[in-house]
Image: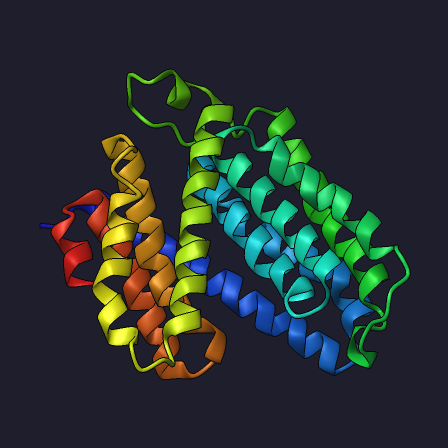
Length: 270
């Protein structure tokens, strides 16, 4: 039976997902209409306002998700150098959740420096560097103020375990990055064999390898991995932009959160 807190957490998760995905469409619309520069400052304020009311931990996770999702649209498919920058962004977002919110604030403040480096951009992105300078700094300054006023104190995610590794922010971040590497490896392997005639025979071994890769984690760490993996499975639909697939994405995220709060059997159903 879902409690009011469970329902609230689930709806909050869907809200964060909707804001993040919706904001990427909003930025794309501004680029298409040549309004990127004009919209930069109000867009920054709008995103801050949409997340401002969230509790500390929920807001920290929301900013981590938004950091990866919104900044990834700048780098995906661009160049090897920009893929490397994207990796730095992802690492900072993860460290922000498990170690210190300063990592997330730092990436928003530092990111405009990257945008000022001369490079080839599509016509629609002509105003992107200056727009990002304005937009990113609005968010960066907000996060710094929130951190300095101790709003995020105690908001980082911990894991109950006797191991020294999981008792420190560096250890938790390292464990999360290891599991991220496992997830990326799984995605690459599945992508490379999915169109092959023998892919059916590899499905179970790949899934088994993924499961075995998690057994070294404490129970809390495993739960974090499976909630993230279940949500990621749904997230693969969100990039198409089709309404039905966005609904599936939302449903998978909802099941991921309910499974985390109530029962792992919900993940099995998802």
